Structures are given as C-alpha cells and as structure tokens.
Image 1: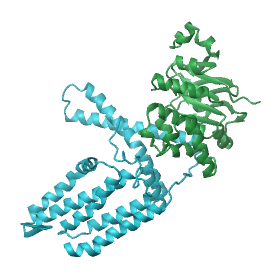
Image 2: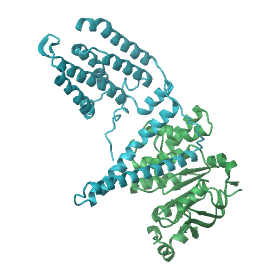
Image 3: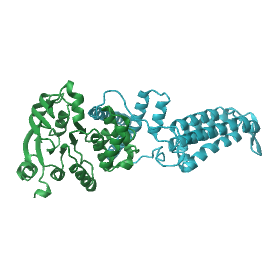
Image 4: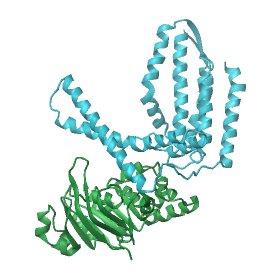
Length: 240
Length: 258
C-alpha cells in the first residue's frame, strides 16, 4: 500500500533566497492524523503547500504513490484537499452551497450528484441549514467548519489543515476536535496550539527553521519539556 | 465586524422573496424607466407609482425605516441637484397635488419632481435588493446574458468588499491609537499613502491565497456553477400583475392626473 504522503529530501527557498524547508524527508501512512508543530515561521505552512504541489523545490513529493509533477496535478488535486489558514480565503463564492459545490463541479460531477454531495457534507459539519447563506454571514466557528466542508465535498483521501484552530473560542475548538476525530481521511494539521495538537493527533512532527527536529507519537514528543521549550513551545496540559 | 449590509433582509422568507430574480429585475427596470420618463409636472402620478415599491416592501416585511435610512445615505448628491433648481428657474407656476393648488415657481416644481422620482426609484431598487439574494441576482443577470466574467467579478467584489473595509478600519484604528498630535498635511499624506499601499499589498496577498484555494479545488479557468433559478406560476402571476399595474397607470390614470 503506498504511503499517503512521502517527501524525499525536499528543500525549498523563498524567492529572496531564505531557506524555508531544508532537506525534509517524511512519510505519512494512510489514515494517520499528524500534527505539524513548531514556532511561528518554522515552515509548517510552507510544508503543507509543498505537499499539495503549490510550491516547487528540490527533492520529490509523492501523494498516494503518485509523484507531484505537471502531468499529475489534476489527479493530485482530487487526492489531497487543502484547507487554508484563513477561512475567508477558502470561502470565495457568494453562498456556502456554491462554495462547497465548487470542487465537485470542477471534478466533472453531474449537478444532481453535486447537490447530493453538498447536502451530505454540510450535514456532516453541522451546517445543513446554512447552505444559502453568504460566507460573511457565518460566525468564525461556522466559517471554519464550512472551509472543511469545501474540501470534504471532493472526497479526498488526504486533508491538510493550516492552523484550523486559529481564532476559535474553546467551544468551537472542541467542536472542531470532534469533527476532525470523526473523519476517516489522512489528516495533516499545522498548529501552534499544543493542547489542540495533543487532542487531535496521534503523531507529531516538530519543525523549526525549516527542518524536522522530532517525529514520533504525540505523547512522547510533547511531554518532553526540554525539547518543547527549546523550540519555543510548551507541554500541553494533558501531558503534565 | 458587522456591516449594515443593504441585503440584510434578502435572507428572509416571504412570497416576494421567493419570486425569481430575473422577473423582479425586469419589473424593477421597467418601473424605473417609466418613473424617470414622467414629465416634470407629475407629482400626483408619481405618488401613484410609489404604491408599488411600498407594497413590495410591506409584503417582504422590510422595515420602511430601513429603506428610508438607505435613501438618506445616498440623498446628498440628489439634494444638491434638486435644491439648485429653484435658484435658476423662477418662472411662476401653479402647483397641484390632488385637490390642493398653490402658487410657486417651475424651479420648485422641478425640485420636488426630482426628489419624488429619486425616492420612488430608490424604493424600487431597495425593494429589489432587500428581497433578492445577491447571488440570485447575479445568477439571474448571467442567465439574461450579462457576461460571465462580469458576474464573477461582481461576485468577488461582493464577497471581499466587507473584508477590505474591515482591514481599512483596523489600519485606521491602529493609526488613531498612535497619533497623539496633529502631524501636518505632508506627514498625513505620507501616512495615508503608506496605509493605502499596505491595503493594496494585503489585497494582492489575499488574491494569491484565493487563487491557491481555487486551484486546490480543481479550478482550471472554467467557471462552473449550478443554477437554482426556475420560473414558477407565482412569477408569471407577479409579472402579469406588475404589467397590469404599470399599463393601467400609464394609459388610464396618467391622462386623468396630468
């Protein structure tokens, strides 16, 4: 069975020459939930962009055994769904229905299939009664759930979420943890909130200065107080 | 931040909300053209025309205060134009409104007609926008032949204008928090330019991220949407009733009152 995501010695530099990712080798098994943790500017979001083929560096990236290149772009897009950090960037259509239908329509599904899929996904994220709403009429928590729905509607095997807990209050964060724990896809989540990472992920990859510092079971990595503090992080309360 | 959206009542449910956007748009367009083409001495007939948008607002459960507030917001431009009429046209004129007559000037007559037409057409526009979701209006316009590129642009404009306004407010607040004295015109201009530059860069960054979000969902420069618009019997009834009202006013009531 191919790995869900595999990066082989991947490096990337920003246009100004600053190294963003340095020699990253990483593989993620299908169905795993992995949290990418690290301080601000560590390269977490850039790594997610590399996984979805939005940036090109040196080295190789494989998604479900398929190498990211120009020929495979369309197939890769249907395998991996990317949820951006700011839901306002993710929700660009006039209504929630249109936004969730955007991906399936681009996949070439028939309108009736699209409608059924949109209804199913909105029910999953608890927004079935909001389909006609404009995104600017949704609350922060609803926008986050809606952003996830836009990706789920494409039935990807892998979902990447960039800081999905950002600007959420504890109640909405708990709802998000519940929603993510119910998903069967491979999840790669970046976050700077250690309690959130501990709540959702079974595996943690610590990144700093564009390099992988540690990779392993969440409890093992995140309960190492010295490691966490050395990289500007903290031990989540459940591992005290 | 919550904005006073002009379409904030468009998400309600009422018989007029459920009408097809294309029918409402065409009726509003014909209504506006007829009101604008009324002669300058037609205050009484204008009052008859005003019944239609008022009825539409009432049926749509749109507070009249909301409509009047929005008319006030855009009124200064028209007020300047209307109030300048009595200054340059002082020809004596006997004004009549129903059974009442009084002596005035042609300038005042024009002034009241301009204001009357403005209020009635604005009421029609507000009635349309307040009972029609913006995306339905865009979908309707697209079905009627408006170029797709233009409707996409309008859709993006509507989606992101409020976010841009929010960002501008945040920048202004940050400036106000640190501006402790009058900086002088030169520095103020420099600051304003920097603020505009910051907004432009943020907009470009947002556009870049939206492009990524679109590509991530398989966008290949071909815009695909599902249209939910459907002409039903209630739309036909509304179209016939509107036509009867407008034709009745134009051919029967207008000759009596003018």
